[in-house]
Image 1 (cartoon, rainbow, N blue to C red):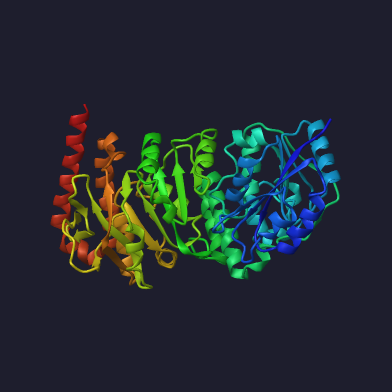
Image 2: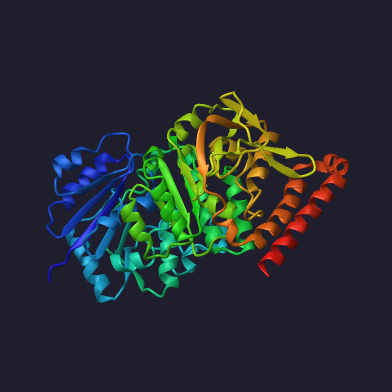
Length: 517
């Protein structure tokens, strides 16, 4: 029986190894070859010239490993898919033997056993603590099981991977294979390993990065994995481990462009966002949608329709701050931002907005209009009694400094966020942008509104569905803002006014309750 396999190779800056791999693999009629190039510094146009039957996808920026793998999976025609690194030497005979052995053992996914450096247990906070502390002298990671499938040579059924939602695109590089292994195990799929001989030079693309950049990518992914699977205690252990090697919150800058995250809770909002902004999406180099409205199988329809967009689907919406931070942590750009799924991005909004950027700016805002054509926000004044007042008129100046910017549509300088941190996830939703703006100002960064940049906000299409919760969060989050940003002297000075304003919040909670009931 003829066995057909789709071989998916993600490539970045190792052309010699990729050429050698293609020379071997292209001799077979049983292999469909799919190459995803993650914006290598050298052109890979030679692939189509030398290997015309190969499917080549060229990304305009480095999308990372997981997202690129999903791009390959979308176009793969065969049930068996082999994800293969360019520095892993495989030929048709080994691949077909691997498929036959996997099929015989009734595995849904399998990989080749490699050196101890890659044959690691499925991560827990205990195994990671052992690996990155003197405990590794007392305990061996080989004692722990199950093991992580090696993502550099991983065979899996396409139907299985589609059912799982694909590779999790919140991982840029590293830990995406651990994440996939854990989801396979948790979903009851059968996985295995084989002792085939394997030549693997290891980390060829990754070694081209500076040593500190490698650490930042690795520990960023480790923290993402911990946030996804570990308890509060386990997450604190990983946080301490990470701080030994990197205190940065975000990936290194891989692109001088920008990355924008769209948080989404309702499917109709997502459809409307794409419909309303189809003429402006192409001007955003990296667009990331973090959605709780689309399940594992539906996500593929969105990925096929919008192949240039990264989709991260989550089981439930944990609030604006956490949802947007998921996108921020995988953003590759120099400037990263977020726009609500209920905005219309008017012509030249982004070009004009970036005309105000400079190294001392923390956040950049357009002027936000409502559907009636009136200004909803041209920046926000923060009053000492704990009240946010949107500016309703735009200054004649091109770039104006304000107390706070509005996260309905905003850009942040990545290095500024690496200094002050991301949205505080204790807020959940509402006022997290006020808190972040105040933290940026304390560190010497400016919050700027560009008066020539304009967008239209359709208006609280999500929050109007749960007014009671919003009223409570406004009350709770203003207390957080004050505790974090006012200081003792300012709090004491304005305590009566602060108390009176919080009473108004409580009144809002009561009003929402009686309206609902």
